[in-house]
Image 1 (tube, rainbow, N blue to C red):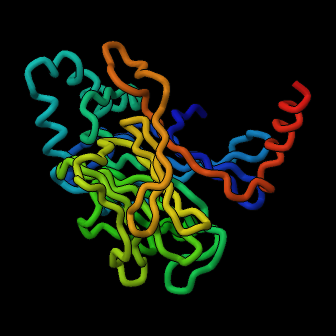
Image 2 (cartoon, one colour):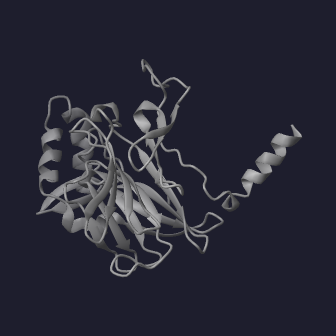
Length: 293
């Protein structure tokens, strides 16, 4: 089976490898056909053999809004779209080309856009259990814990407090840290949320707020000293702030943008600080090679 993998790889304690991948499917909402991207979780063994896959569309099917169908058809009938899309749409409805549908408008056929997958390493009463998944459905502004055995979300946070978020992580204090992109408000922020109360307990907002903004992508990491490392992806910038929001370390990508006609720094998708080097034996080999040279 072929998959178009994206965004995330997570390794379980038993060595199994979990990968986010996407497949095109045709589903029906209120009787209307909707060509849509399915973000699957594909499982491989340590030696790379396919073991299983989980369709996230099957997990969250009841959450798909009917206006997704309306928006899809609206874009199909736009001038210039008929020749490029209609024949693919008709072919999918007839079942002739189930994997050939084009996705020209991001956020329409790419209905969910799951950008994060992590595997929980502990049980937390009332929240999740070891082996559950923490996922982020970007286009629904939804963070959730998923029980893969029950094929269901057991906890969710989509209160409208975060907009197009990225990279939620479960911290040692059982709070969730995430990058809140905020494309409509024109500034980003980093949010720490208590999953039991679903209240924001800490956030970083720049001064002025518009000086910190990554329209897409982004990452944040709580460090052992209590500071937070933030990747402002679009600007190719990574910086560290204290709990009070003071910037104590600032890095700007030295590479220029690679896209044709682009100006400024190349983006940085994600940067994390290695706080437990003992988990990365490759670093010792790298150090030894550097010394030999």
